[in-house]
Structures are given as C-alpha cells and as structure tokens.
Amino acid sequence: VPFKGNADLQAALLGGHVMAQSDASGWDKYVDAGQMRLLVTFGEQRTQRWPEVPTAQELGYGVVSTSPYGLAGPKGMDPAVVKALHDAFKKAMDEPKHMEVLAQLNQAVWYRSGEDYKKWAGETFAKDKALIERLGLAAK
Image (cartoon, rainbow, N blue to C red; front, side, top):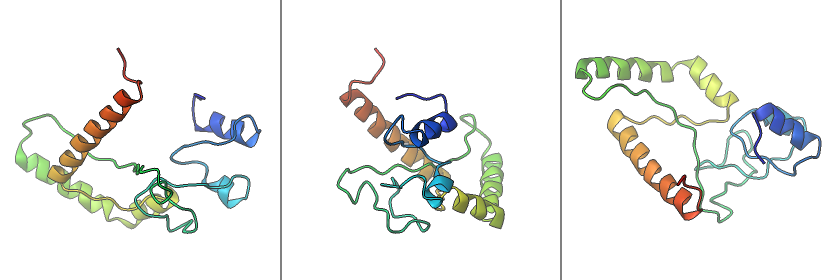
C-alpha cells in the first residue's frame, strides 16, 4: 500500500489499517514502547539495539539492504579536490556526533573508499535492476 510518508504509514499500522510496514526509520520509538513488534531487520548482521530480532537473510529470504550514503561529483574532478573532500568526509564520519546519529538510526558504520563505493554502487544497481525486471516492475 503506497503512503505519502513514514508518518502516514505508521498511523495506518497503529490504527490497525495495515498489518505490517517496512521502513528505514521512525518506528523505533514504537518498538521500544511496545506499540509495534519488530519482526525482522534487513542488515548484514543483527542490530546492537535489538539483538534478538533475526535478519531477513537468517530467515532464508536472501535479502540484505543497507542505507549507505556518499558524496559524488562531476566526472573528471581534480584529484586534489577529490582527496580533500574524501578526507573531510572521512573525518566527519569519525566524529562522536555522527556515531550518535548512526546509533539513533540503528545504522552501523559503513565506510568505503571512493573506488570501493563505486564498485558497490555498480553491483547494487545491476542486482536491483535485474530484480525489478524479474518482478515485472520495470517501466516500459
């Protein structure tokens, strides 16, 4: 069921209009308050916050989904600029405030170099494209 956003989706679940939801964030306070039950997580490993909750991969679904983020720039950027941006971004990732935000979002640190991130993005795009096509969801 499509919803305009997380708030509408959570209201529908709490109101008994839908039986389950899948979303990246915003539901944790309801789980902690006992208003929602966390059934599964989609990371590579169980979360530190809810170690008793299995991952989709553990349950045999073969699904791992993370929420990485990165920086991108135009092709052909000056390597010195790329290095300066990389180093500043990496330094910011190591800041305690960033770690605090990751913990609030139940996210693990997921650092990749520029080349490793590019490789991951290409592989993920190809995998997701194949899945969308296999499911018949590709735009025609």
